[in-house]
Length: 411
Image (cartoon, rainbow, N blue to C red; front, top):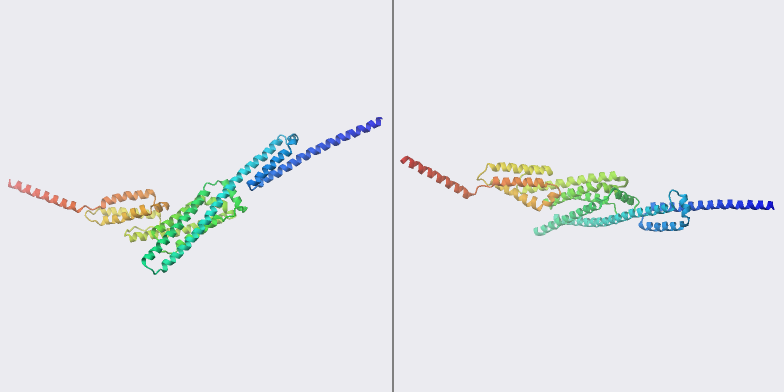
């Protein structure tokens, strides 16, 4: 009997040991499975590339929470001092953070896509206008029609070029609006999108390079149909284009340059310099020819500073010349010729282009205005009536002195 009781005790003890081991094995398995599920969701959140994917993962987190809720005490002990709820909240917090970042990226992608569509539109329009300009230029060159018809062709040609330049300004202004406010973080995220080809639009750097090349090639060619205003406008376009590139070029290179950032920067900077030199040379030559035609003989100039010095020196020398003239109208005629150029062209017709391209600053224009006022007062001749009146006055005084002298002698 005692022997049977001994066997029963051994069996019961064995069952308790086996049961405890089984429970321990079950607890370990639950913790392991929860950890594996947790890690899988965490990794999926890290690699998520769309808001839709995040929404699905949020559902997975809720499912994970419900599935292991009954084991919360066990998991609390396993992850102490963290808790089961802490782990779930960590996933939800990360999901919200990633979702916010992806929303920003998707919004940025929409803006980039919109800009890309605009650029494609500008490209097609510029290409069309370039083609049309070439056709009009050929028509002007080979035209044997009437002078009136030729004048009409020239007018259409210049209007076409003006429209093309306005489109180019729109392109760079759109780029400025899009990229000037981008933070470094957004630029990095955009570069990531470009690197993994999630943005399928054309690289804007290619488009910018083509615009620079096409304009340099066009400006470098000789074209007698263009006026000073046309050359000023093209000079202003180049100036604005380069100014915008200096402000946002670094961000665009970071976003689209990939592992060739330095190469892109060198190419675009070099081509911008060629474009600047071409537009500058043609604009100053055109300005010089216009002044020569208007019979205003300034000193030599080929840049903004030397142009202002030439204007300043011309007025000072003319004013000194005027100080020695009283009756002569020669200096006053020189003044009127220059005033017609200054007020009619610089301050009226070309005013916006002069300021946009910084050919002259506001301070320089104000200084020239003040000098012209002084020159005008020195150069304006005495009115003939005043000369006659002065002569009569002198004669009257002389006669009066003569009469007075005779009267004194008779006394």
